[in-house]
Length: 267
View (cartoon, rainbow, N blue to C red):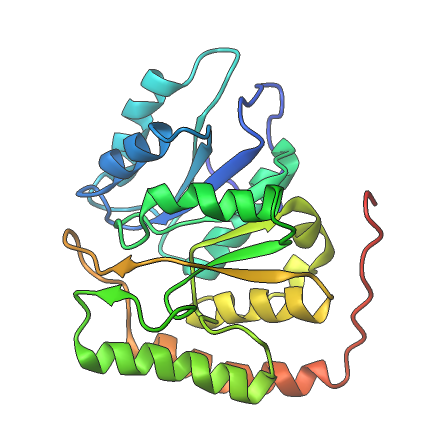
């Protein structure tokens, strides 16, 4: 079954967890089974939503096979959204947000499929939001220095420099502005006008943090160690950095003429 970003979803099946981990995929058959099984082995129960962009390597098929292991007729823990074609990271997460909100989850998390984000770190990210006072917790590579493994120096400098650039232009007090390992409280995603999100690549992560900050939410960075993928191919491209460079300037200028009105809690 395939869904658009703001489609209606079947809410008859009950979920076990109050938190769901959204994992976008494109050609991740080398990683997807291991990462799903690792998430389900954690001491905290997380449900998982895979958003697959028509992976020609059969990623979605592997997920469908696993669903029979983790789902019952009454309870669904492993969810799958299949989309036609490669539409970008940002739209994958927007589709996932719509799905998670419709299902009633209180905590919505983002994570990569390639183990660059350690699934064990889902627990401290969740706890920072559920008990630590954060509205948005961020798995940060740069909260306590530079914590990346297996990256060439050029990529480290580019990523760290990009975050410094974003901080300089926007004034946002976040060290890892492009981080894609995060936990949102439900209220944050209900407040941000998701239908107005403009960016699809790296800049999507920047835009979401920027809007959460502008709406007055509390953002807390949780130190993590980021390890570059060892299986599968990276999805990075020069176009992603170009979008982020110009997008940050456009986004900041637009914010000067925008009034950010917080949504009343519970509305």
